[in-house]
Image (cartoon, rainbow, N blue to C red; front, side, top):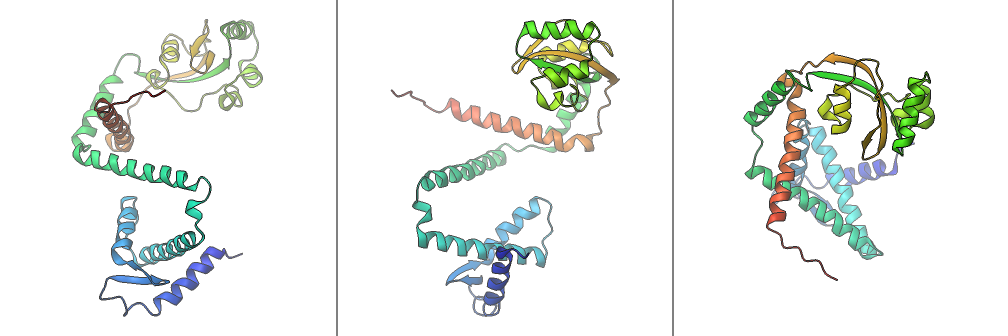
Length: 272
């Protein structure tokens, strides 16, 4: 079945483009929707955004964007006609959405003034390489876990497993962490000790392959019993392989810096 939105867009586009090429060439307008013009500069904004995400500027891309802008304008006109933007809690929802967009623009502006450079990425990569050459992050671990609500219950799990009970079966039946529990306690992916909360990381580096923690380990989600399934020497990915992940990490730090800097300059008064 053809979606109605696609039919609407196609019909609307055909109707509009047959009469707009010459009419709006002088003004920079590309198409008119019930008399409201859509300008080339609007299309260019969306094209630039798409290029930043890896798309190529092609006639097909521009046609698709133009079609989308036509549909958006038609919907906005209908919203104004029906007063939908003023109904119920819609004004508050619109305000929240607007704030979200402005917040993103605020972060973009901060990053222009405080850019992440290639040298920043290289320096952080070098830092990570040095951290994994020796010490607690020189090895990475595969481990399984059972998560329960209390220390006494966790210690009981340890007693049972060390007594011969199946770790996998116990995790499936008892673990509160359902994702790993469904896999018999197996935590997906290899991890470095500093990739998990400190209490778990400390336990991992003190266990050898196949061993179960002798004491319960507390985290913010409960009490853990862990078993080390395998250990291997950590091999740092190449700079090119790591570059994007490092950039995302630096980006998160930049955003945190921006927020902390703003909060320091903000007066917050608690009201009764």
